[in-house]
Image (cartoon, rainbow, N blue to C red; front, top):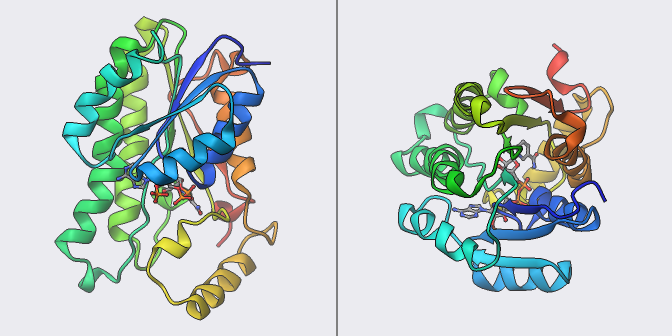
Length: 249
Ligand SMILES: NC(=O)c1ccc[n+]([C@@H]2O[C@H](COP(=O)([O-])OP(=O)(O)OC[C@H]3O[C@@H](n4cnc5c(N)ncnc54)[C@H](OP(=O)(O)O)[C@@H]3O)[C@@H](O)[C@H]2O)c1
C-alpha cells in the first residue's frame, strides 16, 4: 500500500499504459481519477477499475476542458498528490507529408496538454506531490516518420527539467518516463493497415535487445516508483524503460 491515502490523477487513463497504471495505483491504496476523451470508454474503464476509481471527460488538446478540470476534480478530492500526465497520440508521417493537422495534434495533445494540465492543477498539488510525465525514447533518436511526434515528446523532456527546478522549493517533484515500444492500442489508432502494422512490429521487435515489446505494466511499475516515497530525492530525472532499445546502433 505504497500510495495509501493519496489521490492520483492519470490523464488518458482508459487505455494502455494509463489504464495499467490506474490498476496498480488502486492496488497500492490510492484513489484514482482518470481522464479521457470519450465518455463511454471512460465509463467502461472506471467500471473495470472498481472501487476508488473515478472518471472525468477532459480532452487533453482542448483548453476549455483543461480549464474546467480543477473544479471537476475538487468535487472528488481536495488534492492531487500524484499527477501522471500520460494522455498522448502517436501520429506519424514522412516529413514531406506531415500536415499542419498532424503537427498540431501531436503538439497540442502531447505537449501543450501536458503543460497546461499541470499548470491548472498545480494549486491542488500539495508539498510532497509527484508529477510524472510520459515521453518516449524517440525524443533522443532519429526515427523516420516521427518528426512531429518525437519533437512533441522532446519538448516534454525539456519541460520536465525546467519545471523540476521551479517546483523544487514547493517540494513537488517532476520526473519523466521514456518508454520504448510498448504493446498498447496506440499502434492500432495510427490508421495503418493490420498487415503492415504486424510487419512493422516484427521489424521493431528485432531491434530491441530484449527481443520483445514492453507491457503497459512495465511502465506502470516505473510510474509507481516515481509517484511513491521510494524516489523522494529524484526530480528532473528520466527513466528509460525500453528493453535496451535506445542504447543500440
Ligand atoms: N505504446 C508505446 O509504444 C509508447 C511508447 C512511448 C511513449 N508512449 C506514450 O505513452 C502514452 C500512453 O500511450 P499508450 O501506448 O498507452 O496508448 P493508448 O492505449 O492509446 O493510450 C493513450 C490514452 O490517451 C488518451 N488520449 C489520446 N488523446 C487524448 C486527448 N486528446 N484527450 C484525452 N485523452 C487522450 C487515449 O484515449 P482513447 O482511448 O480515447 O484514444 C488513451 O486513454 C502516450 O503519451 C504515448 O505517447 C507510448
